[in-house]
Amino acid sequence: MNKTLTMKFGGTSVGSVSAIRQSAQLIKSAKADWQNVIVVVSAMSKVTNLLIEGTQAAILGQSKRYQSIADELTRMHSDVIFELLTSQAEQDHAYGRLTAHIDEFKSLCHAIEILGEASPRAMDVVSSLGERINYHVVAAHLREIGVSAEAVLATELIRTDSVFQSASPDMLISRQITQTRLNPLLEAGSVPVITGFLGATEHGAITTLGRGGSDYSGAIVAACTDSHELWIWTDVPGVMTGDPRVVKNARTLPKVTYREVSELAYYGAKVLHPKTIRPVLESGTALWVKNTFDPNGEATLIVPDGSPTDSISPLRAVTAIKGQTMITVEGRGMIGVQGIAARTFGAVARAHASVTLITQASSEQSICFSVPTSDGRRVVTALEEEFSRELHRRDIDSILTLDDVVIVTVVGSGMQHTPGVSGRIFSALGNKGLNIIAIAQGSSECAISLVTSATDADESVRTIHELIVGEN
Ligand code: ASP
Ligand code: MG
Image (cartoon, rainbow, N blue to C red; front, side, top):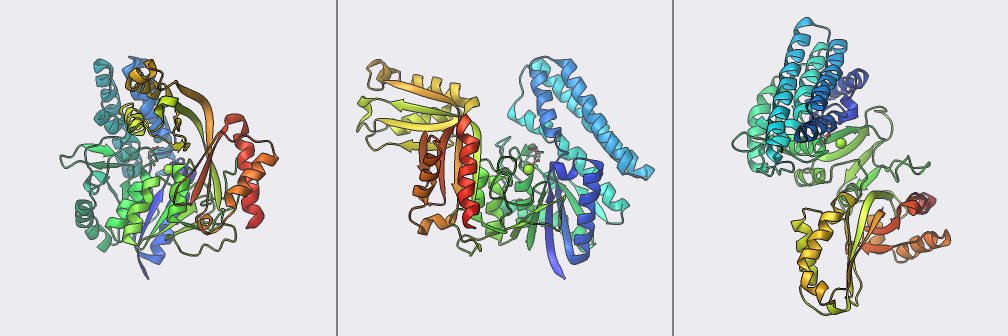
């Protein structure tokens, strides 16, 4: 019998009574094949968004809005509790937890309303409530279908730094405390059901690992327990060649390398949180992405870089992130001047924006990069401050912005050894009259990114996708 399996269920996989039933059956059947099964669960889908919306309403003093969110959250979860759970004792327990957490939500929103602001630390307490409500429900349902299960709060397992909203785990301590807490449960044949998304500092303050961070939780727990495999259960058939909403003939990729999946995750393919890879890579845990709603259907195995992926084409998948702003810092006075790039990105960092793509032409007359449009204004203001003297002296002529652009990224580790790949991509786009605004290729040669206008984006994705499926 196999030894240890960690399974992580995302928001849609635990987002309704039928989804929880389905996920629980998957856990039950895994328990028949594996000695130890560990489960990590997200909040029900939409819940984290609602919680965050509640805090924003509180900041603005809209108490009616957060009250009505509290009611909506109560209704969503109590509907599930009373329909899914059958025993009075389990219902009472889960409902008791729910009402306690909703009270916590209301008090926190009230406090935020009085303060007129929400610190990152307060945000983590609020935004983790969805997981803290839901894991009780999943554990209770497992017990009712005959699987011995215990709800375990990740604050007891995952020790993080105090970078609230984007905390990083201390893997050594986490490993130690996770094993101390989980080993007795596993030895007794029980399935721990753990909250995704959150951890705690050494002083016990709740932290979160960033939006979509339950995948990362799954990887941390899998690594800390020396799991042989980590299965990420989601609502799509594994890692696909393209977004099926944009390209009709998207296909599941049976094998994808760590590097490829990281690039895809970074560039907007929402299959895996980008930080998921590192812990499992280091622990040698096999990582699968599977579809809860078609459990025996196609799935993707993430394999170490350099492993064969059974693909003929060097191109594997194409993805797009919308809502980007291109910013160009331009001027003849920049030629050969040292420190312009450092100052540019220093200003971006001070604006707390993350750069999604960078290009610079060799004449050094301009540096061009993109940020999410929501950060665009702040970045431009920071750049204008940073370069006020150069702008005044006309060494820098202008800081230009282009809103509403899209980064289209083609990924494939085989590109490294195949000349002519970018040529084929550009010809295909050119033949259709699709305009490329900027290009960037990392030196790893595992991905090429193009910037297009929002109007050309979907067609560019489809054109590149034809090259992918045409060759596979
Ligand atoms: N519930 C969290 C979020 O929506 C974490 C996750 O689902 O992965 O961001
Ligand atoms: Mg997710």
